[in-house]
Length: 378
Image (tube, rainbow, N blue to C red):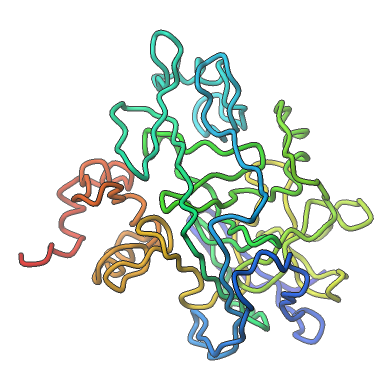
């Protein structure tokens, strides 16, 4: 049984194991990635971790999505069709297939996503704003987008774990697809960015990413009795990818099919893997089946894109597509710059809808205006 260091949170204690570096820290191994995922050769660079540690990182670039990857469906065209999946967190909360039964259940709770003729409200929020209170989001891909990521060559344990909130950076799959924690809820935004049956969808910036361990998501469907299946090969005992702290991520079982034991609050433990004896994460058997926190330290600037909007976009030198000064506003709000960028998203390039953003963030419009920096020239 490993020793643990803990910190007290409002939701309870969050603990991470105290590990002997010799047995716990396997180097990140990029050779196990699908090499066709990389756009150019990965390089080793000098980098700084979020705790100020100077070290080395792998830096690599991938395209908007892997070649040949089949994605969708996301939103059904009508209530007679089947779309992807959604984890509803309100009354009758659980994982659902996005179909007529689910949409009619939401309608009974006051969330109407379809017209009287059964046509589902669908919007591409990369190019337009929803014209209705509740729409299913179905973003088009942008084939020109490149994504650059960084992973520590040697993982560094954090003093305390980092809890992953909404759209938190989790890691990268072995085929180069980025992985993020929970998508914003319908209660937050009024809309549903539906996931496909592998647990992924397209960011407003036009690139595909996952909100689940896609290669073990069928285990979740069996556990939660959802009529769905992912077209990707499923392997509950295999490695799915790397978390952004450099520790590997595996499916919900050990390679021999047995359930992992002595998992910490981040769904990780020390054990033998194909990479050696190291700390690693496991998927859970319910949704979302990703680590709820990371025990290691991420690299600064570990996720950027060439997209004009969305997570990781750079505009006026500010991560998240926001001008300077918004990073301080995000800290005051207790959220990441990416979460603030999403709340203020301006898909048509116009001014943000502060009333809608305030509602998403649980603030009044006046409170949000007081926190945000003044527009240029004011």
